[in-house]
Amino acid sequence: MSQSVLIPATKPVIEQRRRGLSVKKTIVFIFFGILLVTQLYPLLWLLIYSLKTNEEILSGSFFAFPAIWQWENYANAVGGGKYWNYLSNSLFVTSITMAGVIFLSSLAAFAITRFRWKYGQVVMLIFLLGMMIPMQGTLLPLMVIFKNMNILNTHLSLILPYIAFQTPISVFILSGFMRTIPQEIEESAIMDGAGVFRIFRSIILPVSVPPIMTVCILTFINIWNEYIMAATFISSEKLKTLPFGVYSFVSQYSVNYGAIGAFLVLGALPVIIIYFLLAEKITKGMVAGAVKG
Amino acid sequence: MNVLKVSRWTIAAFVLPCLLLYVCLVFIPILVSIYSGTLDWNGIGASKFVGFANYTKMFTNDSVFWPALGRTFLLAGFSMLVQVPIALFVAILISRYVRKPNFLVSSYFLPVILSVVVIGQLWKTIYNPASMGGMINQILIQLGLDSWTHSWLTEPKVAIFAVILVSLWQYLGYHILIQFTGIQNIPADIYEAAKIDGAEGFKADRYITLPMIVPIFKISVVLSFIGSLQSFDLIMVMTGGGPAHATDVISSHMYNMSFLSMKYGYGSAIATFLVFVCLLATLIINFLFSRLDKRYS
Image (cartoon, rainbow over all chains, first blue to last red; front, side, top):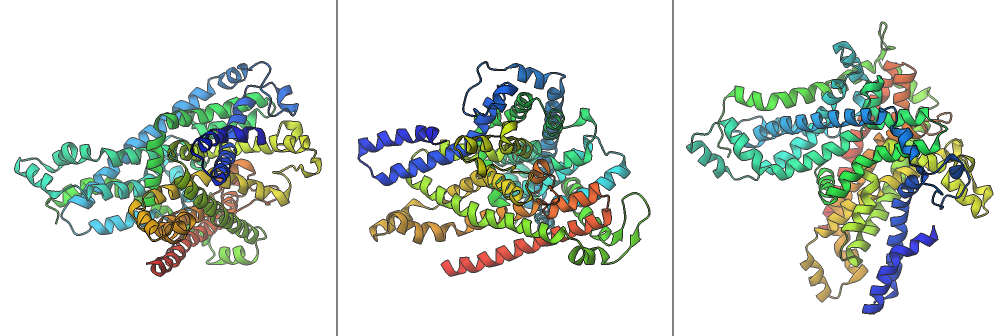
């Protein structure tokens, strides 16, 4: 590993010479480089691994690039159409969940923060309590409930709990923002004869776009990657979401190492692409979620 | 004072859809779980009320429970005492030395957003025996350290540490990001004032950064503790609690009891215990930090 450590560290070394800075800074940047390698090298290794033949993987030359890039590993992984099936299931479940979370929690946050009524804080407290409840505690009862409702092994059995578990943090983030919108806006809207739904739709929602983006990002990352509920409530092959699909693919193809690697890369790819496009928004959203949770 | 005076029906239309879904799918299941924790029930047939028998069995007559609880706290301990302090150290260094930190911070953060399944399978491959293409063992062999090679995930003594390492690896970037953001939010004029008073570098960190970052640090600690108590997707993906329960934690034990051994009553009792520990832990950490806060302000 020590070879590649030097690469990220060389640039600061040049800078340092130019400005005549201390040895301390070099050490710090070498440290940053090592950390960068430990955080990213496993992912890069997987990418190279996914393009090798079985012989190359087993030969022990883990640094070497493949002699011929085995794109057919990807053809094998995608072949049979399972990947596209898992991917479209994930897209479907995640987008419905996101829409549901935004719709329901913005309505609730609006009522909690903008209506004149006694129980707003009580409702808020109920939502806050929920943020401390671990999802695992509800797995078993939910399975029994869904079995009785006859929706076990349907996408509904994922979407419903996904929305429910995302609402507390979403209501919290949205109401935190909506509380800061000045009252005068509503006063003048009422003067102009706008009803409650109109105020919500044409005034509050449009100004709340930034926190809604945060909620979108949090929901996307959490739900897209969710594995345990999917593995518990879903059993048919054609309904599996991507994480669960990746898991079953890998357990089935235990000898074709390259194809497994390729499938793992494909499994990670959608999130990585989105992260490349929206890195700053995503990190900000995740911090907002953590800090407010 | 809010200006919108609306009818009861309007309030209901806005609040109830969200609240009902949430109460029905989060709160009621927890109550059901508390109730079924007192039953002897396999999920299909008749159930029998047994009072606290499940709990008695859990605390006194379950050879997996205490070691699993121990490993849960081992994971939490590593996370709070190794991962979070390293993250704070890195965050301080980044904010001091890097002028354009976005690339570095978002690269460290990348593993956080990947699915646990991908991460778990990736590391399973890395931990594989050298003959199956595992990177770590291949490196050790090339360095001539053949005796250090292990079958990392199947040897009971090392397996849990192999899993903990992955968990620390994946979420390190999360804590770096949180604490880095915390440091960025400390007003720059405080540091300037301190500079005039002669406090710079690590002295400034000791007397400004650390006290000012306590609230953010608390968030990191709570997240890492609660996350460790609940983390079992990684364990389910990598080892399923094996070999021979050597990597079982509380939640994986609960899962295996409920869904593999079909002991619904007993599984529910463990789930209830887990919920209780989570609530208690949050309260205790909040209490400790509120004292720390007072001392510094």
